[in-house]
Image (cartoon, rainbow, N blue to C red; front, side, top):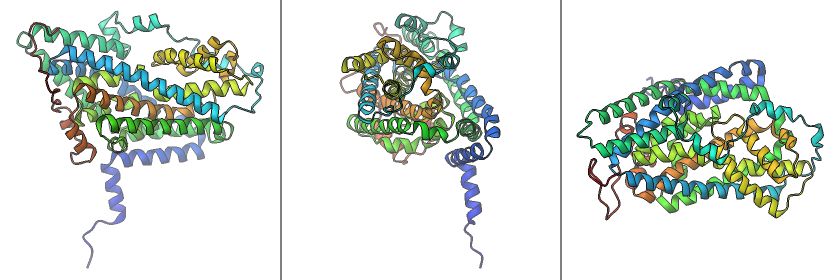
Amino acid sequence: MPSSAPSMPRRVLRTLRLSLFAQVACALALGILVGTLWPQAGTAVQPLGDGFVRLIKALIAPLVFCVVVFGITKAGDLKAFGRIGVKALIWFEVATTFALLFGLVAGNLVAPGAGMNVDPSQLDASAVDEKTGGGSLPSTSEFILHSLPDSAVGAFAENSLLQVLVLACLVGAALLHLGLSRVPAVLPAIEQVQEIVFTVVGFIMRLAPLAVFGSTAHLVGQYGVGVMTTYGKLIGVCYAVALLFLLLLSVALKAVTGLSLWKFVRYTREEMLLALGTASSESVMPRMMQKLRQAGCRDDAVGLVLPTGYSFNLDGASIYLSVATLFIAQAVGVDLTLGQQVTVVLVLMLTSKGMAGVPGSAFLALSATASSLGVIPAGAVALLLGVDRIMDSMRVATNLLGNCVAVFAVSRWEGALDTARARKVLDQEIPFTEEDATDQPPAEPKAGTEKAVPGEAGVV
């Protein structure tokens, strides 16, 4: 008598059809295979990944604007929004400083560049200029000015998240000041635009396997595995330090919120694999915002902390920059003193904040650090040209998880986290649905506080 259970091939096909994670995982494996066997073909399919990232980036600015405005207005308290921003910046500074120090300690203990005896005069310094386009990182004053929009349209056209955040805060404050009774149609319109954007993101996410295949095939086809033998020690140190840092983050998350980072990774496994495959954390920002909101984080906390973290909380990049600085110094035979290493931390604390959106920003930050020390030849940064792309996976995963942990921690700190709901979501008792994510109830306010009413005097 034939069995009613589906056959193994049918079950596999059904899983591939229904599971985005399975599709992306298969695309990742296929990309590695194609890049290894047919390198030229692998390089040729790069536009699949680039095109996907471009489509997602086109939606980030309007999405951030809608989420922030809607979050501020729904929370009804602009002061609370300001407190969230201040607490987020404190968290970011502490986290990135720890990341820099972890990298320096590991670089000193393992010494990944020792014994290379590189002659910096033999390196092609012009290759770094080609990688960075001859640009430079903005100064502190330039960075602050660039965060202020000089054109409302330009902020969206240039996809400048900090400028969009400033505009969103101003619009949210204006809505609170006027009161929703005076502009009753504005907030529903913003909410509807937000739902449309999330729906379009859902359409684009169906192309995620193609994007991962194209990006992975290009990476393997262009760089191959030979780079692993030359820079294996440096790669191993960076990835090991990143793993140790993530373990520390998991402990911090557990202590602050009682939530498990591992369960969050399982909850966002599709997004994590997509970010790794495309080497872009921006490609999953809209989806991460959805999942964080469904996991009990209030709209205003998600809308402010996550996008701001993309500029101020680059934990993975901080680890890479500190280890890479020591690697370069050791490779050219320069022994940095304790004072010079303290200078490295101070310089990187500033330069790492202006890296987002700048082409070749890692090389610019390393060049600025080398110049400030005065003992490392600037051309020595060219040593990292062959390995920088391999580090993207480490930087992307660490940056992304660091920002998500920051959202949970700051939300809990501000009383903007529904912890009970978060546990149920991470325990998979509440399955993820895009409808629920766009209509997530706000967390209860802290005891002893009252929710402000939009339009009342003193709100702004």
